[in-house]
Image (cartoon, rainbow, N blue to C red):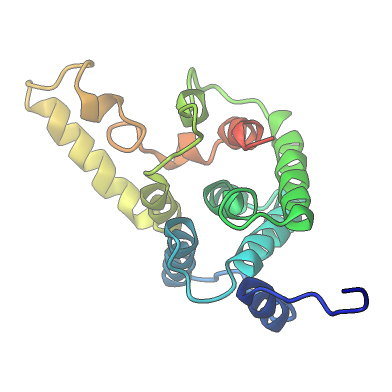
Length: 199
């Protein structure tokens, strides 16, 4: 019937309530852990707030972080890669989808010009469905630089046993022996993930 108001979905109502409340950038490893937990809730479908708001706030932070060349650009890129599909597949919303894709593309362009010396990156092994189930572990790594030494020690111990070989699955995994801050936060890896994001 003409003139009848459109019915808003619960997601629309949640988004309207939350959209004026910014999600602040984490300042401590613990705050990054909390945010990563929220992102996992969005990805897994159990986030209690407006998932669309969480996605768009991640996009907002990525845009400003990439423009400033800030070190936390890696977390925001991985976060948006992880949860951005929500507004494309789980709860489609064309304006939000356009926004997320534009931010990802812009961040990718900003980072692809930065060269590196890595022979390979995790983005080279993105599966056809784009799913990277191990991203929570990567986000934890990036939030906790103090764990780098523990990982290096575990890798050295594995190699020192004399039983490990280059063919071992753990050593070849981007979430095992190749799980390093340097390669995951590499601008070329982030640019590759931005390119792999659903177009």
